[in-house]
Length: 71
Image 1: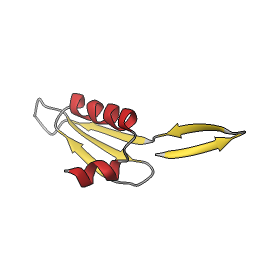
Image 2 (image 1 turned 30 degrees about the horizontal axis):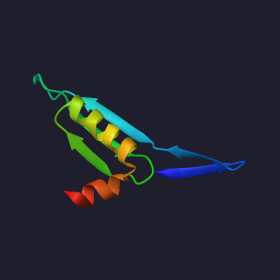
Image 3 (image 1 turned 90 degrees about the vertical axis):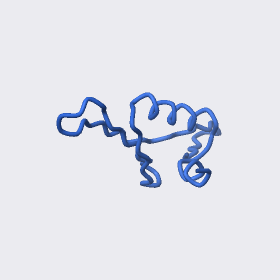
Image 4 (image 1 turned 180 degrees about the vertical axis):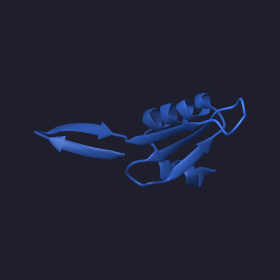
């Protein structure tokens, strides 16, 4: 997470690159979330898992690297 200040107003910013693909002939989508700030990537087996991860990141105020260290 990056905090930007302008005229004493603080804004939190998260940047994620979301990749979604389906391997040849498979029904299940694959998802990868990459932090724009750290380039750390995390893979998921469903879109719901990826969005849950993003929701947790933005509500818990943890960085992606903090999350990966907890596993």
